[in-house]
Length: 205
Image (cartoon, rainbow, N blue to C red; front, top):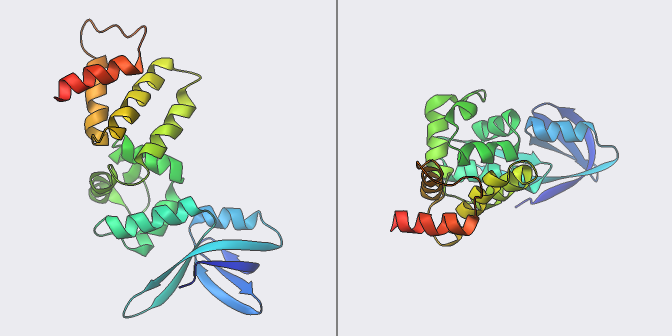
């Protein structure tokens, strides 16, 4: 199995590249996100790879970051009906962090805007990935981006993370916390993550 390629970019197009490794040119299919990074690179580069084998073909896919490759593998391994071609389309249509955030928030409309995906596939992606690898990491990213601007949302994110750590599914945790905050008479002026967790545990039990 080929884990990565390190060499010179002999040719680069938006969907493919040829990497010269010691005089041998490796043809790899790449997403736009990787192409953009290759275009900005000079000298030797390294691409992480996924070697895909079928009865009809052996194909090498290349990615500039581990996050890109991890998401590609997650899509083709965990979502029914998604193969390597659509996996590349997803990476080309949306940054990894934005994709994770859309899945967590169940934003089918945003995912459906990716070329080649459509509403039904977007719904399937949300259904099959929302409780998989990357959920906690994406929530932490969302927390970091909102912490300085919205303490109330930070408290909600912290409460959801705590519930996930206790074994509750992300979707259930998120909906429960949101329903508590929206309750009539709930004091939202001084939100506290611990208080939200206690209230959520009462509601779910």
